[in-house]
Length: 265
Image 1 (tube, rainbow, N blue to C red):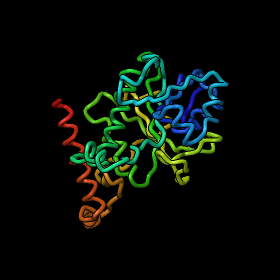
Image 2: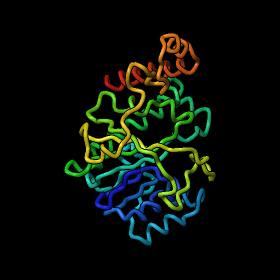
Image 3: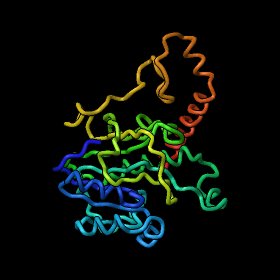
């Protein structure tokens, strides 16, 4: 992950605040942390050790912060950041069948997770990022299910003026003390390799030379499945008949239909 000392950074949905606390070692110009839970809920799940560390370093922390809902943003200063970071986002599990029926009866979990990330990007650029600053959004994710099924590099910024810039490996060793938690559980996620995906307002940014260009983009690959290269047409046809490809095509169709509905509202 690329972090510059002159940047003003906002973290979103930092479950136990261990990532925000680890960011202090990079000495950013300013750091603000936010958590979806209340302080009482966070303390009950994980303890308040990292919160107390941040408070001791005069780092503002906003609780009950839902990046999708303006009503929860409270006193968060508008247009005050260079970079907004969302680490390993994933919708929490439904607490009941009625909650599932309310939110996902007609919308797949894949689409709901994509909605979350798309809304994060749009709100970050519209409300949190300084138009005269760096204007960067980072989402760190994994190349395992369900994360790999979101087509992060291509799907999230469709029909927006946001540009996908590239990616960089996420090295957890660069963030001492950071623990990747399961959503709503006091357990850690297996330390599989992470990737930080980067968006900006322009197609080229000063950090672009440090980023890996979008992968699997030309005709020799299946972009959605991140598969290939296909050196023979027979290989491409075999892939197109695979269960994995058919499922991804279903996810893509559902996503495009959801975007159409959102545009009509």
